[in-house]
Length: 477
Image (cartoon, rainbow, N blue to C red; front, side, top):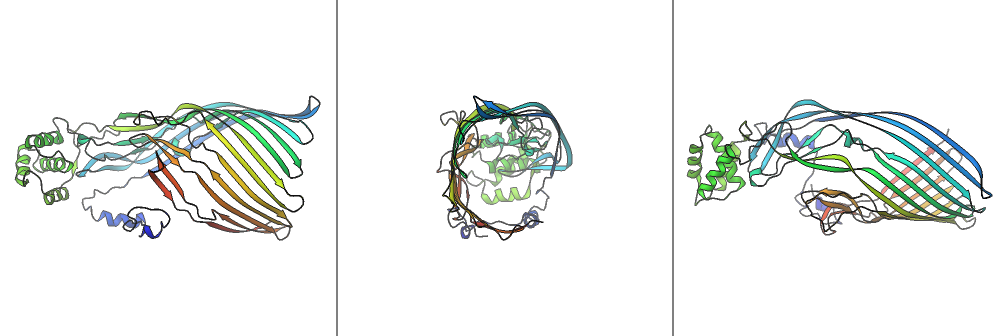
């Protein structure tokens, strides 16, 4: 499949030789290349159940404040939440070393993993507004709110990855644990705003908001073993890979993945006889190096499976936890204006957001950092027409660059979504009181989106986007 024919706006590297396809059709083709059955699949079914009990009360009052009309809304809510998470997943049972730096995690039939969590919150809310003049309204509010974590973070399943190369030669192996015990974000919110309604459909407002948020989700990283898996390429003394490293050192040859795998495979092929394996290996050397043809022959003929003499496989385990808090504040400015009775008008708003915790580019790149994600300034400008049953809006929506992920990869750096703007159009017409038709165009100019790693020059993903159009008909009975 020719990617260079599709991605005509953005360079995609070797797009002429890249391909895509239906995984269900590709799997049998790939499986045919592994007659020994070493191409495996994993299955996982995650179920998360939340039971929420709540009790709430609300109070409303209209009165006067310094002789001006005022309104109060107050309420309180108590919630208890119980979380049960169950995962039926293929259980990892062994590590298969199939070639110099190729590993697979072998799995058995599904087994069940489970976890649970619980939390409770008291959530007050207070809103006060006063008519400063006949057309100026002041508002202030305080509330405590929660934001529940995504269900995918509450899964009980475990993601186990295969090693990327022999651990004896610096390879890494990673695993990821979710956490059914995660608590939701809890935010204490303060807002204050002033609104000027200078015409029937026109207003100007400015507001300030401040949010103190705790229970942000972070990663806890530690080393450990999972599922009693063992490492066939550890290089430790008393193991096949350790004996292979000793032979390589004695012979003074390159300590490569190919030589290490070949020797371990030959030790297996000779029933564990290290001397016989060494003699066979030395007989294959040409000029002190193992020819590529022999490397290919050995890796095609043998696979290495971990055994009881191999040490436990040590994973770099990443688990989601609640471990941080931060403060977010900002200013919102909004303006709506209609030009008399013409039906023409516009809306404009700008939001400036600040967070007190960001990535420090001068810190140790291999240490995890907590940073507030998704914070950026946004702006919208919309041209409006509303008259004679027609409603038309042409909007430009813009968002500044923001940090979308932190602690990604071995250097624990950040992923950024580059600033992005697009034009959207929405037109509708009420044919009569019951029937209406509409047309919507999204991203009219087909603006692309870039995501980069650490600096803008280090492209991570590019989305080549195209306009989307929708036609709609609505009928009221």
